[in-house]
Length: 530
Image (cartoon, rainbow, N blue to C red; front, side, top):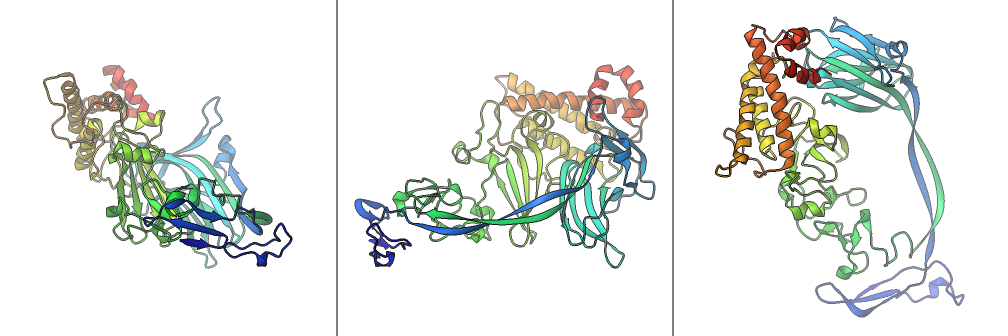
């Protein structure tokens, strides 16, 4: 038998003082295995309330400076081009009829880029005040899928520039930089490139101070409100209570396991414990039982990067239909090659600090419908490839592709990486990758033929066996787009070879001549110049 007590803080119906009530408020009788016996419990159903002061905090942004990119004068005001003539051409552009101006910074070819990146341009932001929390928001892209860096610096009391915050950009991102000023002087926002032969495009820039606003109010909390009633189904972090196991509110369904809030522990082992060997398989949110939320996967793959250098990889795209349904995800079928969760398809990198707080999140190969599905497929098809860190060119070829289209794209990426080297001229111009393009087209044709021939086993030589080896419309659409684009690249590179043109001969300079020889292919390649 389990006996619990609850205090009463108001007189009862007879006007008796609360402290003269019986201390026995509830009694429960259980079977030996923990289930509540029917009709073997007593509960005090009276309403009991207590006042509680609730204090709230909110970070309120105040815009200090917003760069108007829709006017050439305001867009270029405060912009300083880096010394050393890294930028060959700077111009402002606003598409006719559209309210989205931008600045293009075309870099000179053959630049010597240091390890920390080469500064392209700097914006000066007016004073935000000393010791002020701030946020800088910008949208920046680069051509040729070149990774970028953004930094915020300020001159300290010793007249030395000090880094306040920074962020790495894959090559197209809306970036938020947060930090605290040192002095009342101006801050500078720097844009850096990690490689030459690209154009850096700045769409927007705004700086805000972040002020902490606080307030409080008093409200009454009662035992039949706000999730305290036994009739309310949900408890901690919105998980559904299972009151038949250990009594009201003492057992909760966290999808994969049952949680005991009295212990702050799960009752069964973590099914992904092999990926997290340093954690207890029964711990909740790495023992942060007050403010932690136990994460569930929402993508193809999640890569967790910890402050001590350790990483943990969870591959959700290899889950069974039953497992992914419990996550609220989408199962594989005639269209989708493999399962994925509500977060969309792609690879998600999550970075943590020493206290276990999430500091940064990067997506790769993210497909959420629409244009992103035309641009990416699986883990390797599309511009670039999945990486070890989520933002550099340190490509990760250890993951198993999702289907045959992804497997062919992975082999193509590996072939490119094998011949590119330090003087890589990009996927469009580097003639050394011609054979890799030819091989990819041949593999796509071979795979298509194997699907159409009932007497031939499905597959293609020279690539890794993917997770899914059967047909899907997602794979079919991807291979169609792959073949059109890669065949166009091979045609252009072969034309360059036939005309004794090297990597330094650019498409934009040879568009007219190539277009006369291959007009349809030139139209396809024109899309890469946008």
